[in-house]
Length: 413
Image (cartoon, rainbow, N blue to C red; front, side, top):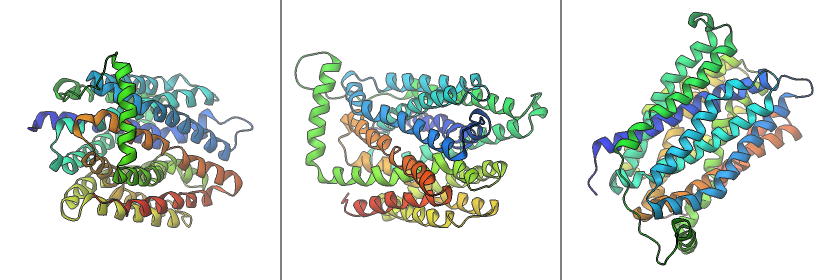
């Protein structure tokens, strides 16, 4: 396959587009506004709002996990990865833009819209990931995947800075209060997501899939190919080991992303300082993701991922001793050093293990695993917070990072 530079950059801008939701909504503003505004009603404690947030994340993850392999197979059979990409982008972006409809105390509406938007985000990522085999040669998967994550961090970081200004200095923009600024941030994030997905729709070309043998509609052939792929994966020890490792360690990574702000608030840190610390993560993660892509060319993607997992385990231990905003800033910077690298190289390592013409269905399984990998972590933290306390809850993630590291060590790329 001959790489097209414009197609590569257009694909990478999908990460630029959807990362805005990840940082502005999922990580920063939604957990904070849920605790201080939507769920600020009698009878809803900090621990309960943490538990409700984990349930919303879990519900969206289960939905996409159940659908992902079948949708990926259907997309390959019908050459419709881009069509599914559009569908999930619209679902996520529109739901995000509707969040301002939730008024104070409307935590059920807010959580429902958030769950739908998270479902859209997950589906968007699934079909974006699957398209990497259509835009890059295998030898460049690490570099191209890291480019996407790098652009995602710098682009969403720029929007995040503006959104922080909207929330912290609303009068400067003619807004009544901080909540009005947050609502504008939600609207901007939805628009940003839609706008920067357009280049991929124009310039990325899908490689025709290999149709399943036999008659029937696209859906029928999709089901047939799904079962065939499942049998192939069961026979491939490398894939089974990698997916087993991935489901554990990426659950830990995703939980840190989704629950960091909630965790900081729960142990008494300042909300404004937490938002500022997330900026540190964003802008460190941009060059770090690119650097990880280069480093993978020297020591291998698997080794780089294992280094990142080890750093996450150390972060969990230190987080239990954290008492000041300054310490949160330091941990945010360390997270930034490894977050993008672990995510980007996991995607490229998996792409090397699969047949390129079946990218949709195999990445359907990859994303099914990834979405089940956002179920256990938030629940572990939520239940631990209820049974023990919020500070101890992050130690539960050591089970995920330790198990993931052990299984990944057995993978022979």
